[in-house]
Picture (cartoon, rainbow, N blue to C red):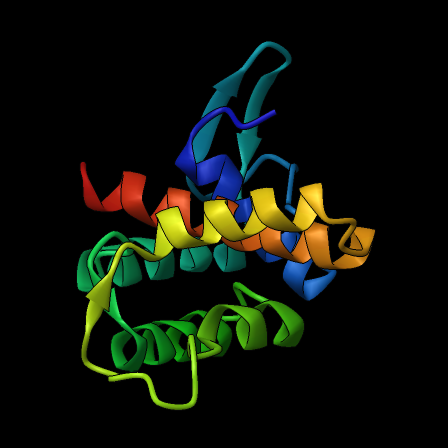
Length: 145
């Protein structure tokens, strides 16, 4: 369950890097849970910081393909998305696309997911699309703060 953005950043980092969140007592950011405090590793705090920085740099509801490519590069460099998710997120709409035309990438991604689910896209593709939408929603939420 997502407690807050800090916990989600740790979850993203753990998932993408196959690491673990440090739950031992010590230094670091902590979040209050029903079971007590959870202390986040340095890597999880770095992931949270990277997400905040990227969210402030890009508006996923008004982004060009060129900007989206740069955003994907930033996410991938920080280990926040997989290669598969990066390819899906950075793909242009068409060969003749104007790379500087701004679009609502979050809405486009949600519409594409709905279409894929209705037309029998593979479960692996659906999961990749859902991960990308989750990342876009998180970036939008962080940007709006």
